[in-house]
Length: 318
Image (cartoon, rainbow, N blue to C red; front, side, top):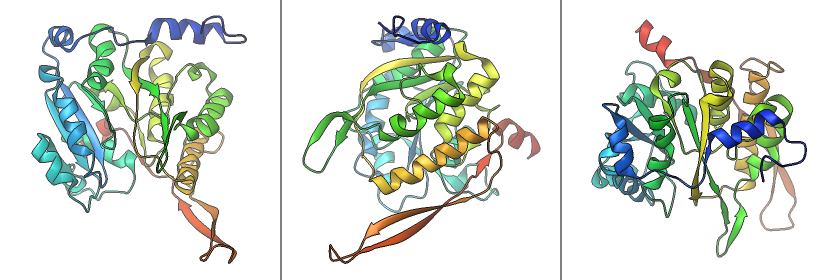
């Protein structure tokens, strides 16, 4: 059906047919045999995820010998995330412990970038620490193409994303920034990537030697930056994607999604050469005063455009 979609470029249709796996066709035992001496590190970036981190660590460890290490990257937690991660069987690394002497910067991209210095695996799997109802298939699916298809270097997970409200759950609607910002931007500036189902998804895996050569955007634009940079460096067939079923996690409010969308916009325009450079942006949002009906007031949030160069260059210069 995808190949028959009206107006779909042949290049995208062919890539989707070659590089999309749905459902996951491998078992953990089959992939353990396929490792052939290669090692797998699973990284969980975490910021105050005490309610979910232990469940995600347990799900990852359930993949057995397929996983060689589980590392929770502590992005500045002030709750019991670290304690619960250790109890579940993970190693916890604070940002200042990875690359000591280099002052940490804020943002998810910084956490992921430093994980390259805190892990040792040939293959690195990123899994968000706020997932619920997750199982070992998240690791099995993501490392499958890397262990069985020599040309694949980056594997994106995709899934149905319910929109979880306070008392209800809608079957879909959780990927609001994807549909309203990321996908239109890719259609305009990188249409070859239009077949990627979840360009912003936090569950993905890659070969270490690829990640070490890529720059990392500093904030929530890190995922789409890695996707675009992989395409630029290695070509479309270096990217694969795997159906991971359903992804449930904490849904953010619209104001937070506005900041996320601003970071993604800045990254894509930078990669496209339209608006390069690290200039910050003041995002003006509006909030209703208390009590209700007392009027609205502006809230200004600074959106920085930070990032790091390739880890390979950093380690070489130290």
